[in-house]
Length: 84
Image (cartoon, rainbow, N blue to C red; front, side, top):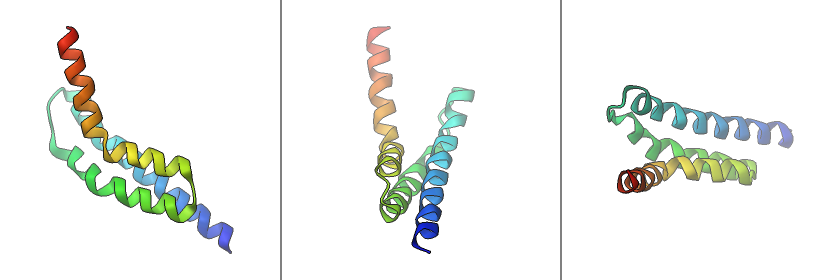
């Protein structure tokens, strides 16, 4: 019973990670800043909680990455602009 519950938490955590990735796709495809990525600030921490309940370090790290992805992309974009 506990193993089935753990698998459900892992699946929910991975789904929240994938949704966070999908929310960034319109910004990269259309090269225009859509506001869908703002949902990552809500979905990422929910995925972290699901990963914690599943005791999955990988799920926690991936969802933490999605939570802070805006800051990571801003840093990479600033570096890119300064180089080119």
